[in-house]
Image 1 (spheres, rainbow, N blue to C red):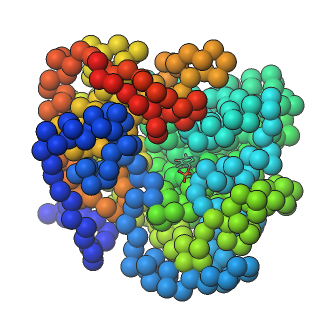
Image 2: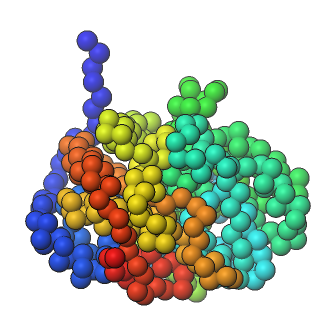
Length: 457
Ligand SMILES: *Cc1c(COP(=O)(O)O)cnc(C)c1O
């Protein structure tokens, strides 16, 4: 018989987790103002808030940490890190930062100014925040198909080249660069095809513009290219990565995702002028240019993590688990953004809680219900995350309203996924009785979802 799937690792260290009672969770969540970011992690049984910085490092990464060179300038660990980034991406100039948004801050400080327009596919919330807080506009040119959660197409994260070309024509002089997020997190962890990257790069060159890849999950994106795009079946993940980055001028990276470290990030580019402009902001905001926001040991672990996670087996194990959870939800008829993405399942809250009006935030309501049901922490990726329109100050209800179940890398087993699916089914089965959502009682002017305070209606 054919052998079944199994993980490409075995487990050397474990961390106990504890289930709680519903009464405990009711009290804890009330105290947290119905915002799961405000819970203590110990009050959570299975934590699918994010896959960012929550993965399990390998024995090789832990052992590399012992080799950290903590010299202030010119540390050996920096060169190991930089050479690995250059080998995988082709970019010779590398600035370390403490995480992805810090890379955005360092690079955008040098390049994004008031009145600018930065087109791309869906901008991640910190990316949007760093653009809008500089008085610029983050213009979403994602393909329309991404909005239909039930449509199964292989590269639902793509940029619409027609929208991009229209933006390039309309805002010519106001565009500092185009930013393409791989995979497209906001649209559901959906990949961008090589064909699309190639086409966008050609368009950018036609208009004399540069392209940046927001690369948090570039390796997962490469996995989807290998498994879904014609002509890439027999290419290695590393070959695919090199080609992806050949259609870009630079990258911002949250290493907490696809480099499987708990903290770290970087900006990398092929242009000396961008590097020279950004390094000033690195020194002011992060640290000297050979450590940025990281310790020597962090850069060691990052280098090993990047190398490991651009190998097929590791990515196959991970994405298989995401697809396993998706298949369970299929079994129960629970709608989610199709097909399953690379790092998470995005449950379509507006199709489940049909009695909760959009003004009462269905996805946040579903997040609350899932936590109360079984101590599982997901994350609203919807109307609260979308913030208010900076001009009209109105809530933005134009996008999707999803509950994201983000799966940390190498952390949970498929049994945990069974519990998540069963808990969600229990909420799904009583969806008709859920008629009221939540109301905002306090919010920050930008990136409100982290600190928003809510009341149950
Ligand atoms: C996580 C993420 C960021 C920001 O990175 P942090 O390390 O959280 O600061 C930027 N873009 C995308 C697509 C991300 O997923």
